[in-house]
Every structure is written in C-alpha cells, then in structure tokens.
Image (tube, rainbow, N blue to C red; front, side, top):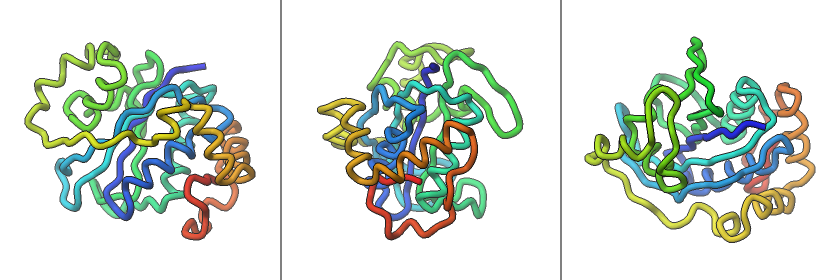
Length: 213
C-alpha cells in the first residue's frame, strides 16, 4: 500500500457538489482507502480566465501503481464530463496526483511531485490543513512554502463533506454504496486491473450523485 495525495478542482457547473461526489467516487474503489480530506477552498484562476475554482486535497492509501492511479483519475474526470479543448481551459473536474509515496517521477505525461504544487495556494493551504509537516520529496516541508503564496486569493469554505468528516472514510464508502453500490464495484474492479471501466462514455446526467462507473 502507498500513501498518495490528490488535488481536486473544478470551476464549471456545480463545482462544489462535483468535488463532494468525486471524493465519494474515490472512496468507492476497493483499491483505495480515503485517509483524510481537506476543507473546500475557493480560489481565483491562475494563468487562466473563467469563474473561481473550488479545490480540495485528499490523502489516500492505495494498492494501485502510480500509472493505475493516474488512469483512475482520468476515468473519474471523464465520468464528470472533463474536456481538454486547450491548455488551462475551464473544467468540470480536475484530479492531479500531487504525491505518490516518496516517488520522484519525471516522464512526459507524469511528473510527481506535481511540478507547480509549491507555488499554488490552492494546493498548499489544504495540504497544510491536513499535515503542515508533510515533506514534498526534493523540495521541503509544506508549511515553509505558504508565505510565498500569501498574496494569492483563497477562501476556506465549510467542511467538504459532513458525513465523511464525522464518520471517516468508512462513511464515504457507505455513502457511495447507498448511492450506487453496483456501479462503484464495477469501477473498483476496473481500477484494480488498470483497465478502463465499462461505458465511461455514457451520459452521466442521469446517474445518482456520487455513483462512479
């Protein structure tokens, strides 16, 4: 098992609800245990236009390899209608791998630690909320970078998901199961093999919030 940290953001549609549903979607995976999640933060776009973003960070324990985790993130983004028409385009959902254990990866389509995480308040503030002493491999402790992003506009919102905050990751799994246990199991099975889940191109508008396929 490896401890990984994900950054989640959105600024299209009902972005706050999308982030809550994305966390439940992660908790549904049998290859993942959600260990902690930050509050929700409202932030100004950086190097882009459009509406404000809502962001959070999730700490998880996973049996997935970093490549399998990346594939799962992409499938969940697709489930919520993510498109990539141009660089830094507004998005319905964005899930980035911030850290994957102590791994340092530099490949064309995957850089870990995330290359811009030490310069983004919407990453550092939620990370510091969960673990200010967390070390970013090759960079340093999270809390030491906060002063450099102090001028970036960021507003802490109410807790991301009260059911998860009160009951822990198990409640997230239960909530996901109540919303769509069969769909969640299908997604978990696909994630465990590193293969895409079935019917990821199907219309998501009729699915119950929190269900993930």
